[in-house]
Length: 149
Image (tube, rainbow, N blue to C red; front, side, top):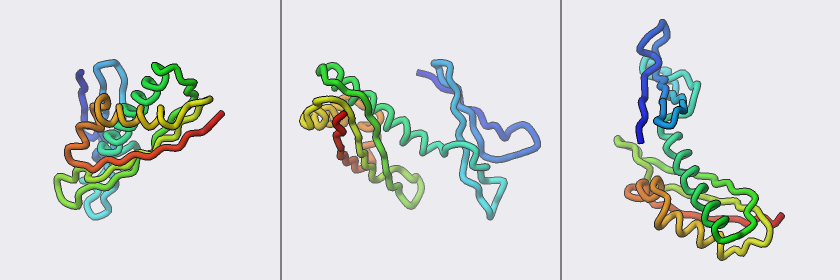
């Protein structure tokens, strides 16, 4: 897996803390820092997600992918899956994630709650590389709701 991240403020009249990531699969992702009123040259322009927000979003994508795939492989009629992540970070550098809560909303027809609980546990304990990696510094908790369609 490869990715090249380039500072967008390195050229041009506007400085700032914007970055363009180009992934090995041929996609691009913008990232930007938060504006800094005290030192504008050190802050971003709030034009894109923060880098740590993309880490959190990627973790949500990784675990949701697992949950959907596990439910589909179990021949469950899954029709929707979203996960809302809320986090806390350390107050001092490095400001790693210290707590992450993942709340899944799974919709479908006739899916047993036990199957959803199992899929989330399997993702959390075995398959989701991102959440397992973040679990080295953060306490990760999960919850879910099941919506019958």
